[in-house]
Length: 287
Image (tube, rainbow, N blue to C red; front, side, top):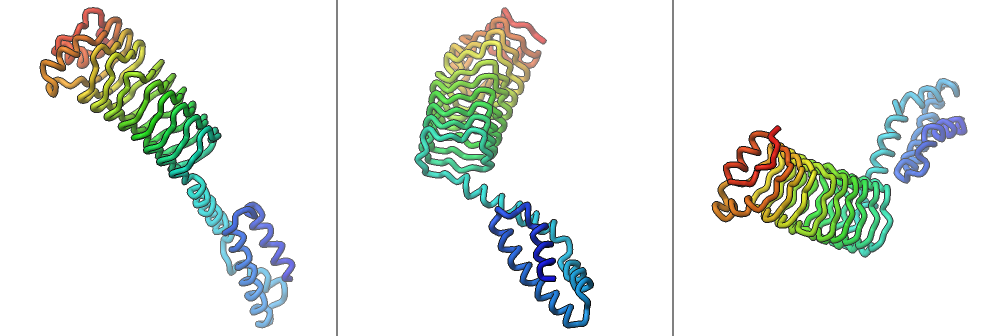
């Protein structure tokens, strides 16, 4: 009958043989069941009755095993994704799942994160020049105080992503919908945005001088203490976009006049705010 108990446990634990903690649970449970079976036999139970009662005594073991396995795998992933202070230039992370991964203070230049799920990860203070984040999920990621020079963000998922004091010279964002993203204290003059939608984005104390946002869409975007001299919104769509009206007084009004809105479409509130700052809106369509 010991063999029958072994076969039963082998069947329950078969899907989780590779999980160390589950293997240990199996060994402990096997010992406990054998002892329980012997006690029932000593009480005068026949083999079949003792076996059934032994199995019933452990309840829904399959659910317990699954929960232990899931927890163990989760912990293993957390260990694997701690790459703080690592030297990993040109590494291949394409397609990996690394939720809350830690890549702080690491050398990642030229690394490939294409289509990786990096939700909640932090890359603070790292060198990620020339890195590829094409198609990567960067939701809730911290991309602050790191060098992203010439990095590629083609169709990346950017939701609540934070760029603060980041180096973005030559970085290219193509076909991206930026949702509730924050750019603060960042020089964006040499950053490239093409075919992007800015939804709820905040630009705080950043330099956008000379940027071209031609043909792109801005919804609920806030420009706060941001340098906008010679910026072009030609043929862009602006809805509920906020330009500060008081912090820089006359100097800021002069900067507003340098912005190109030719061919742009904007809602009535955005139009009214800019008109009040004497922006050149002669070629704007109000929607």
